[in-house]
Every structure is written in C-alpha cells, then in structure tokens.
Image (cartoon, rainbow, N blue to C red; front, top):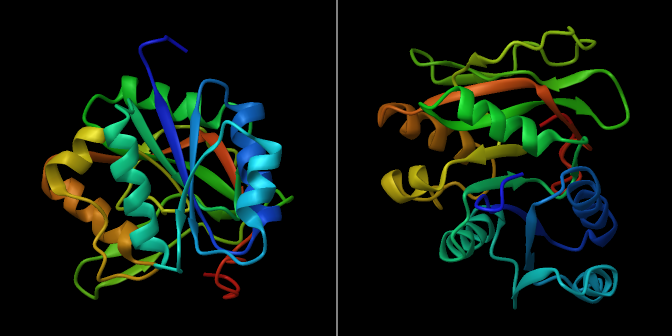
Length: 228
C-alpha cells in the first residue's frame, strides 16, 4: 500500500471486549497498513484495559457513557478526518474483515472513481451463507432489503452499483463526509447507513458492492437482535 495512503478503520465498542478484539485482530493481521480507532461508549467490562493490553498503540476514544452507535461512529469519523485519513472504514465490532478486504475495497475505489461508498460481501460468521450482498431500496414504499440474504455464496465477484451498503462494513471517501455531512444522529442505530448512501447518491457519488472483498458478521450481537 503506498505510503501516501492512510486508511483509518473505526469501530464502536460497548461492553464487548472479546468481539472487538477479534474485529481489531482481523484488521491488523489481514489488512496491513490500516490504522484502527476504537470508540468506547462507556464500557464497564474492562474493555479499554483489555484492548490497550493487547494493542498499546491503539487509539481509543473513551466516552463516560453510552452515547449510542451513531454518535460514537461520528466521533470516530471526526477524528479520522482530523488525522487526514485517505479512506475511512466503518466496521461493526461484531464483524471481522477477511484478509485483504480493505485493500480490495480501496482498489475498487480506484477502478470506479465516481464511487463514494463501497462495501464487501458479508457472510454469517464462520459460514458460507451470505448475510449481505448488496442492498435494495424501494423508493415508492420506503422499504430496504438484502435481496440475497440467507443464500449460499453465489460465487459472484463482479463489482456493481447498489442502492446502499450496510454500515456493518462500509468504506467511504473522506470528501463524501466533508460534502454531505456525517451520519444523521436522529437515527440511533440502523437506517443511518441507508440514509447516508442515499444522500451520497443525491450528491452524485456512486455506491458500489465489491464481492471480491469479504467480511463476516456475528449478526447483531451488539444489540441482541437476531437477523437484523
């Protein structure tokens, strides 16, 4: 990865040190060159100490209370912009990046210069069953779906434009945040990713799925809602 590129990954933690460690491990071990920023939302399970013991160099924003996912993510985005990130990756702490996920997403942005938001194919954790392979939004009914959810891997590897990318793992050009703003904090969790992608498209940016980049998701361990 060229030295000039400074991708920064952001994940938000609340009392799930084990999951967050696995997420951070996947980024450092399989996606070299990334800087990782953890926003801790007032954890009381020793998360910060556990994370610092494993990664003393890890930057952690420590909140005194749980501000909610979207506000925590926005804190991370602001810090990444301050640090001059070349690319900003949002990844749930109950997700893991498969090897070279980030590099493949970044390469797709080079290949599709109009793309402002890109994301990987995402599997249920430890399986070959797809959880996300592109989001569809019905503008007439206001409904969003994952059309290929719960199917075995279709083997498709062609990049394609989609209606939205899930915030479970989403790579964004910093200028998109600067131009359209951060995630809407009126959404406490869920839907902020759809809203962000629709706003990006309204400003002329492409939203692309990159199936050659892959991640896994433990499916809403952070909220306890199965299948969300």
